[in-house]
Length: 239
Image (cartoon, rainbow, N blue to C red; front, side, top):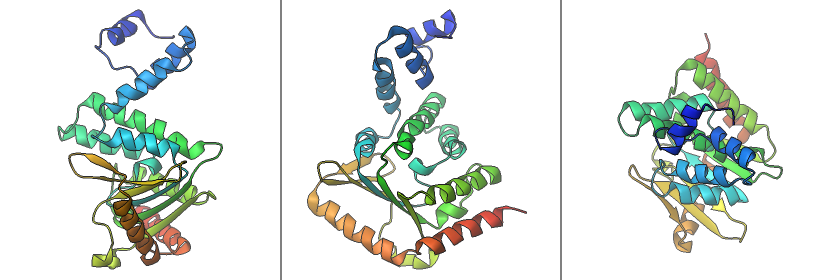
C-alpha cells in the first residue's frame, strides 16, 4: 500500500483516521472493488452536520441543482484552500476537532466529482454579493476562489447569478437553500440551521421554495452583469 506498518497499525486500532487515499490503496491491494472506499465515505460523513449525509447522497444523484448561497460560497464550488480555511476556523473555535476538519475537506473533494462527471447535472447558483466580498482565507485564497467561479461559469451546464446588496429586504431567502431534481422526477429541498440540516420532501413546502427561487432568479443580476461583478470583486483585491 505504500504505508508503514506503524501507520497501518494505527488505523487498525483507531489511533489514526483513514484517509481517502488509504482506502483507495487498500481496495487496490485487496481487490475489494471499492469496499474500503465506501467504508471510508461512510466514516467521513460521521463528522458532518446532522442531515447533511442524506443531502449529499441525493446531490450525487441529482439531474439539476439550484442553490442560493449566503455569506460564503457554496461548498460544491469552493476551491480546496477556501474549504480548508472554513473548516480549520471551525476547529479553532472549538466547534469541531482537527480530524473532523480534515474529514470535511476530504468529503467535499468527493462531492465535487459531480462537476467532472461525463454527463454532469445542470447547475444554477445565485450567490449573495456577500460571498464575493467576505474575505475567507486571505487575499490569495479569495483571488483563486473568484477565478474558479469565473471558470465554472464558462461551462455550458453551470450558471451563476449574483444577488446584489441593494435587494435588501426583497431577498426571498434568509438562509442558504438548495433544490435538487432527482432521477425519478421528484424535487427535494435542503436547508440548514446552526445545529442541523434538513432534507425537505413535502411537496407543498418544496413548491413554495421553488416559487421563491424563481423570484430570486428574476431579481438577481443577469449572467453578464453577475460575471462583471465577480471580476470587479477580484480587481478590488489586486493592488
